[in-house]
Structures are given as C-alpha cells and as structure tokens.
Length: 515
Image (cartoon, rainbow, N blue to C red; front, side, top):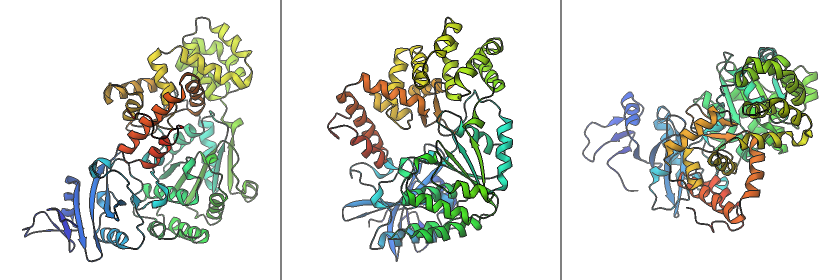
C-alpha cells in the first residue's frame, strides 16, 4: 500500500517521513488531530488500509476504512472520531486481511475520488455484509421532527406512561391516525434515553433487521453492544439462539432505563424476525421497554403477553381525535370562530381520522363556500374521501408546486439535492431547500426526517394519491428518466442499494439519460 505522509504505524501517527515527535494513538492529541483532518493511512503487522472522514448530512462526522482487493473496493465502518482507538484500527485491518472481507463493497468507478463517496453512514460498530448492498440511511435512527400544528394529547400520554411498568407497548391503527406523532411527542416528555428505528421494507430480512437494530441501540450507547456487533462481523451469520443470548446480555448491561421504539413494524413479515423479537421480549431486562408502532397486528403472541401483564395497547379508537381535539386542531388552521362552527360536522364525517382532518382543513382554508364543501364531503363514499381531499388540496397549489410534489412521490424520502437532480432543475440547492421548507410550513403533508431539515418524506396517504397522478400524467419513458436521474444521484452519494432500486425501476434499466 502506498504510504501517504499522514500515516499511523506502530501505534503512532507520523505527519511526515521525517517526523521526530509522532502522536500516540489514543491520547488527547490523537483525538484533537482527528477532528481537524480527513484522511490517514494505517499500517500494522496484521494489515493496512486507508481511512477517510465524511461529514454526514444529518450530524457530525464519521470515519470509514477502505481497501481494494482483487479489483474491488471495500469499506468497513470505523465510527466517530472518539471511537478510533488503536484496538479498533487493528481490528479493521485484521478484518480486511481475513479470507472473507466483512465490509461493504463500494463498487464505485475508480475515477471518482473516495472522499466524495462518503456521505451517509450506518452505526459506528457495524460492518455491513457484501451480499446486501445495504445503505442504512442515518435518518432511520432519528425521531421525525414534529410539525407546527401539533395538538397536545395528555390523555394519551398518560396511557403510554401507564404502560411503562410492562415489557411492551403496541400502538396499532391504520395509516393517518397519528401513531408516529404521538410516540415522538411522548418520548420527548419522559426522562429516558430512546433508541428509535424507523423500519422499511429492507428490514424484512433477519440479517438486515439485526444490523439496523444494533445500529439504533448503539446510537444511544455507542460503547455498548460490542459483543453483538462483533459477532455480526463474523463470516457466517449467527444462529437465532446466539443472537437472542447476545442481545439479552448486552441489553442487561445497559446502564439506565431504555426505551426501544420500532416504528412501522407492519413492514415486517419474516417469521425469523418475529421469532427473534418474541424471544427477546421473553428475556427482556427490567430496565428496557419495547414500543411497537404498526398499522396491523404483528405476528407476535399478543394475547399471551397481555395475559401475562406484559402488553399495553393503544388502538385506532383511542387515537381518534375527540370533538375537543378536533376543534383545537381546526382553530389553528381556520380560527376559533370557524372551528367552533364546523368542528362537530367535520368530526362526524371524518370520525376523528387525523389525516383526513388535516386534508379537510387545508381544503376549507381556501374554500369559497365551506358549508357546500362539508355537504359534498358528507356524500363522498368513505373509500374515496382521502383521494377527494388530496385532489382538493392539490388544486389549490401553483402548477409548479403540483409538478414538484407529484414527481417527488416516486421517492420514499428526499432532500434538496435529490429533488433538484430528479427534476432536472437549474435551481440551486438553497432554492429547492427553501421550497421544501415552505411546503412543510404549509402543512402540505411533508414529514421532516431529521432535526437539520435535510431529509423529508410525504405522508403515506398523500403519497399514494400523488403516485396515482404520477402514473396517469407521465409516460413510461418519462418515468424511466426520473428513476434514472434518481439512480445517478444516489450512486454519486455512494448509496448503492437505492441507486440499484431506481436503476431497475424502469423497463429499460439504465437506458435513459440520467440528466
């Protein structure tokens, strides 16, 4: 390996070939140096690699180790600067030197600088398997940020607090009932560290689920769960009983009460994941409380847990807005006088379904005849109400805004740079970001995914109707072009799984001009 002037060798950092006073790895001077630099090479008797630091879109910075083998570039996640001990560096070098490289294959053209590919990183301790092109976007580990129209719901917060004496809380209701909003509000009111994991379709695989879960737990306790993380780097994935034993032991070592939230658990269908969770609950330490959010009952022994006093539930009937909550919500959007006049009628027509109330409020805000609008709403079949309301809201937006939200509905989540790439826009990132922030302030069903306002997604009901519009308005060739642009952007950020998904989304993968 080529030795750069910045290299760690023999446990010391040399900043030049003639360095006479090297910095000892692990000392305060070492960690200060890491904060101010972005790369170094590591040479040891067990192996070598090059380390690069990336500034994350969401927060902080992050180090990865890179090494090329047989023409392929692999990387291993090292972690934040304060975790780069000599032992951690030696372990990474030894892993690269092994018969099977445990790190993720980078698979990016060699002409692209390595540093430009370091954008979003998983947990500090997890090295992802080569076979899975897994890109654990950091926003999965963050609680979504709440909107400006949040209504206090003390009755539900009291219900959630009452369940902390058991092992599991299940919040189960259809889409649009405010499950995630309620849980985010709750965890911000209690004095407990919270590990949050927003599940997606990729987590419906035992290996990926376990890695995501470990990353979420280590986001709260970076120095914990070392045994679990180490075993996950083994050549063969551990057996289920070994995983349960490791997680149980590591959870038992957590120094304080912990809340573990698995949001969108309805995305999990694999029996192995259900079995793992069932066994974890059986051996769950007293200081850990598990919270599940789902649109449907998960395939877990809910009846047995309830009979044993382990389970606390909130259902759709609990989450529906009461008349008082409906009036308070409408007062913020329409004023107290109008809210008082129409709250009863709207609560009756929507049955407290929060997403429909928000859509109706957006429509009523600009409706020339509110009484006529409510009358039409009352005669709409239930299965078409949400579609009707979305169409009403969209019709009130400028054509450029309609085009933006319709096209962005093809993305599960997006940021200003990705929007700009998909739209083929000449606007700057700052201009696109300003548009996204305006959409958020307008309560146009844009859900922020991180505190720094970088990533967003649409509310699922809203996205579903937008996607129907997308299919109706755009030709297959136009859709393929949008997917190709998204794929090119993701590839440029080193997010290979997302790039591959969009490349394969059209009938002619990679055949369109990426723009």
